[in-house]
Image (cartoon, rainbow over all chains, first blue to last red; front, side, top):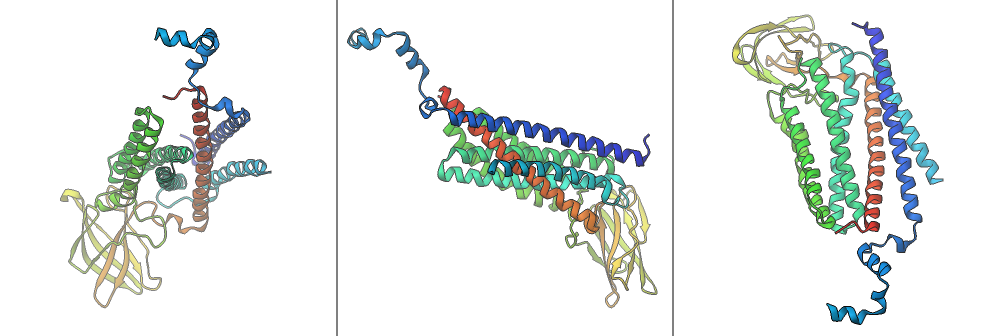
Length: 76
Length: 321
């Protein structure tokens, strides 16, 4: 068993270490969150808008759809 | 400039809490009867208070969300509820450690422990509810309504329910001066109950300005009894000797003597009673409350920002239904 004089210093060191660990963890998360937010705010507004990606892909990969919409309607 | 102030404030939180930890172990005196274990109060009570504050903030932002429908209000409400849950867990764990020292057992379903456990379940259900609902608007709306209802239980579970129970071991009215339990008033030969102990005032003896009461204390179930002799100083107007109850670390105090009527007020003092009467302990205790509150505000701001960012990312990637 540890003497009480020694034990209290051990308790101080352990508790301080735990707090320093928590503090560093919070500090790093805080910095990362701020960086993430800064990057997001820098993005142009139109890129942030929610757009169904499926529609985009169809428009990009099948250019014939834009050229011949009447044919599609007839097929449907 | 604002960023610099914010960074400085966060550094201050780090240094402040480190100071509280140092003061907790090295500056405040040992508490009589509890030794170094009593120091855990500097962490236990502030975390419990901050958890109540966090749940109140969560309820406030939930109400704001239902009123204004701003997603950031919901982010704040969720972040505050999560912080409240975390601080409640901390209070429960530190309380269990304290309980092991004082009562000899980590968990014994004392009314205080049971009520805090129920509170944890209620807020755990909030997170489960939110996780179970996919449409974001519906999740936010139902979460806000649930959070308001959950907060209604907080004052009852934290402040009222443990005080309704007679047999709680938790020092309910122990810490702040002027907030002690009421105790019981007895005259010679009369019987009363203190907690779950039967108390009988056998005799009062006066020597100078010192009054000694002979009190028979019976264990629950009347399995055994003992005679305790608490004393009271008429000159100082306060109790002096406070003998321990048999088998538990509670003290019997003679708090008031009325010689004209022959009535005395007897009370049960739990370990921790009068702990913050000492100025160094009191200021460390207050510094700890302030420190934990600052940590909570920091975590709230960070977590709500993170929720807002992840919501924006989800929107941008079109992941929402």
